[in-house]
Length: 239
Image (cartoon, rainbow, N blue to C red; front, side, top):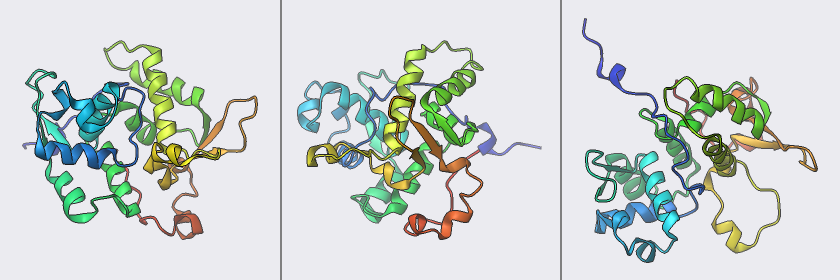
């Protein structure tokens, strides 16, 4: 009996810290997606920082996130320095027809799901939302689990790279509690609106603890609570 095509798909690429320490910010995905429509080689051109209005490292981060969310695709057979990008069908539907400016919370849920969808290019994110079993945890707990998960592969990855991933993931999903200026608001992550990872108490001199809603047995029962009313009833999770 022949196997289905889905069984041949690699669930996750064990690559780490390709985001240049930057989480996806408000407007980034739309900006990268739109620029590729006009110039498929935008990310590999010397003037990309000027055209995109961000720093050189941010250009690489923006390119990575647009690919990781499967809004853009590239020919992996070509050199990374000459590789052009094209819009995916999903990207065209989401950012052209459905919700160009990601104003609907359901769009963020869909992007979160596509980030984890095979083949996932964000291994730390895949591990956290599919394998990590901590409900209340610290960044050190998540890092320790990630190290064990990564050790199962044949690749050697520096601990510092894994730590960068953990820090980036927490900044991406955890709402910042300190009072922010309008400029700081613009560099926040829209994915904090999902409420998937929340702070537990104040950090003070101890390590900040976090609560992973995904793993909570109360999560499904919490659909009727006030803080979930604006979110889709289904939990997007791939195994």
